[in-house]
Image 1 (tube, rainbow, N blue to C red):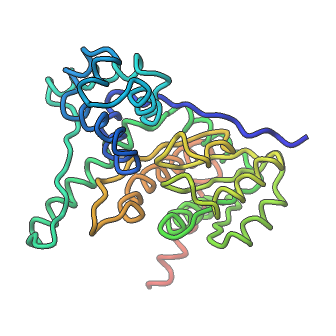
Image 2 (cartoon, rainbow, N blue to C red):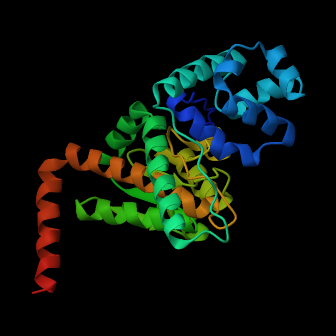
Image 3 (cartoon, rainbow, N blue to C red):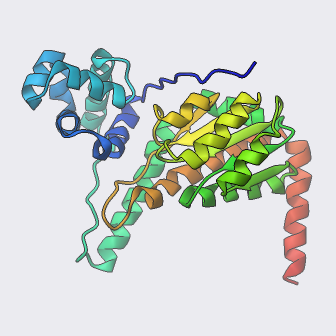
Length: 298
């Protein structure tokens, strides 16, 4: 019988909360944005408030506060309060991630370079903080033992899918990147238990990526989702979810561009883990590929 889609709930750590707020606030309703902006601006003060108190402070309802907590990845407001207390403690120690400044049209190139470099560094730190190493370990195990690995991605995520497959091919694994949904689905039909399917989508709602993952999931393949939205539709068909962060979205740098930094970090972590796990095969394969490339430049 085909497997049923599962529900997922991954609570962000306090270190990842600031990143979640930056990433998800633009997708919220205006009333939820007021709650998110309040907790981002004063986590210590909000952590001391009851759900009723925060609703009154933001001019919203208790239901809106609870919905905001759930969108940020917490089962309820109590869990969000605990994370806010942890974030406040990090801020006092100087270890909390800061909100970055958007790039303006009239910024000088040195300012653009500085802002992008800061955002990239923060995205990597946020992604590392949010990445569930238990889920990563499970994904590494599945990839290391897979008969075949299919990776799905569209647009900017398609470039990341190709990057992952090129890495896996260099250590002797059978891997394919699919950036066309029709080919992805027709190939997913051929998957079975012992195979691995990986979907890469920052929004978690890209239908061209969700559909082949759903097919692979129902065929019995192990499935992994790499996404910036751990409660999104794609995770319903993922056995393992690897969460990414993203730099602050702006007019000049939409999420599709900024999300790649976090995705590439996760892909590198997955690849290195697989290479370690299969080193007896991966080591000679990497050496052979280096030699082949070096030979071309002689």
